[in-house]
Amino acid sequence: MQWEVVIGLETHVQLSTQSKIFSGAPCHFGDAPNVHACYVDLALPGALPVLNHGAVERAIRFGLAIGAKVANHSVFDRKNYFYPDLPKGYQISQFELPIVLGGQLTFPVEPKTGEPYMKTINLTRAHLEEDAGKSVHGIVSGHSGIDLNRAGTPLLEIVTEPELRSAEEAVGYARALHALVVWLGISKGNMQEGNFRCDANVSVRPKGETKFGTRCEIKNLNSFRFLEEAINYEVQRQIEVIEDGGKIVQATRLYDPDKGETRQMRTKEDSMDYRYFPEPDLPPLVLSDEFINKIKDEIIELPDAKKSRFISQLGLTPYDAMVICENKETADFFEKAANGRDAKKVANWLMGDFFAMLKRKNLDIANSPVSAENLGKLVDLICKDVISGKIAKDVFEIMAETSEDPEIIVEKRGLKQVTDTSAIEAVIDAVLAANPDNVASYRGGKTALIGWFVGQVMKRSQ
Image 1 (cartoon, rainbow, N blue to C red):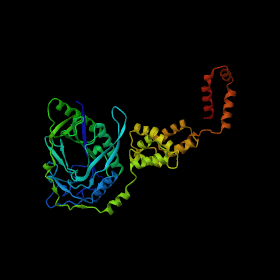
Image 2: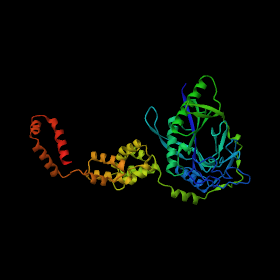
Image 3: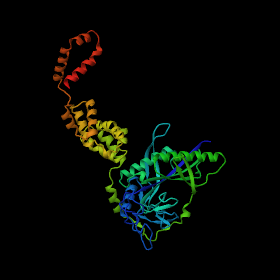
Image 4: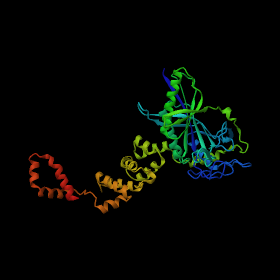
């Protein structure tokens, strides 16, 4: 039987606010347990939540960027469940009336077989909520501890329609979403620190069937590789269960990257199990059109608009523009380097020697020893025939080690190329006069000597 895969993703994006969503405690990763948990995070009697203005602004910014409807009226709810790291016994979230509704995201897909293609999927919603703390195992032998530093961290949960049809599409979407939230500045996007975590709802159905199969949710996937591996394993598992005469049980599962398999945590809850009801300690969130439009006016140029401008105004190819606009830091670096110069040449250097240098040194662009200004100056030296392309590569390697200005490197080391043809002809004449035997051999048919003559001219002219 031929099977169709159906995938929907729920992505938890940690927002880049200085403090938590309902308290003034700082959001800071990596500190000692429980040093950033105040009376609100601990759910002490009488403690009341106060909504973080910055979290709301970031949610609006995201909604506008994906062409969604930003709700003028949204409501916070209590989502009731019991974990040791959830002090209140409930999570403050949004359910029936979220802050963002709808929207779309278009992204490239690179399948293992076949040609790359573009896909657009619809988003269902994005809503604000607080994160839970975390259980810590192994600090005290035989016991688990609770770290509430993360409790109350602001999250934007972004939910897709079930329109993804392969693990490759899910990864393509997740990469594009990650790039967008970092580009917008609403999240740091550090997956190792849990800033960007995906839950994948996976089911299969016979091809041609319109009814959805029973889904399983794979929780807390914090890398693109794990996302792909987990979905592929779960798809194969479900197909084998059904083809062996079994039934899929709706459940929440975890992915074990060491074993490369998913395993069941618990049977899946439905919304009724969470006993949602409006949060009585928070009033409805009411946003005026004026406030929403003010944030809209402040949104920076988005990736697709920047790509189009790079193609139409700077003469880049669509491929060049796509690579350079994968993240905001690279796009900003390129614009600074290309300002007033041959943008295509700058792009070639950026995507060639520059990217290779960063990869070799295991650096990100923010820590590059070669600045945007100096990369631009290097291209100037080539375009003005001050140095050759070959010498430019040597100069670039020196820049990568010393961070020096290329103009100073060329001047100090005497690397300017001679472009005066009369001066070059004088050097050639001197080489020919000094080597009559080789001249005679060349004229006698030993034409391979031309390389030797070129070498002598380069040596004499330095």
